[in-house]
Length: 73
Image 1 (spheres, rainbow, N blue to C red):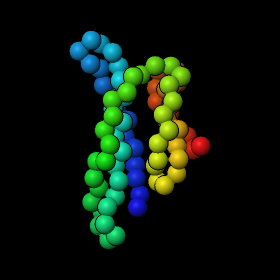
Image 2 (cartoon, helix red, strand yellow; image 1 turned 180 degrees about the vertical axis):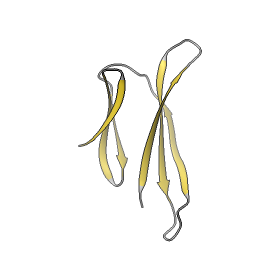
Image 3 (cartoon, rainbow, N blue to C red; image 1 turned 45 degrees about the vertical axis):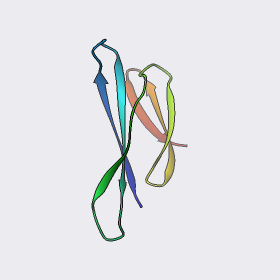
């Protein structure tokens, strides 16, 4: 089973930026359908870290210099 991550920065009505973290997971053996498994709104600040899975790997999502970056752990 494969998974993928989209990160979209959204601004709420108070003007605070937050990442919208969407984790997509493939389901079924021979299908290419994907389902949206988790949608999380988290604070967006320098140095914030989130651990998550993508493509079966443990990945670290972090906020640095105004943008989100992801790396293998």
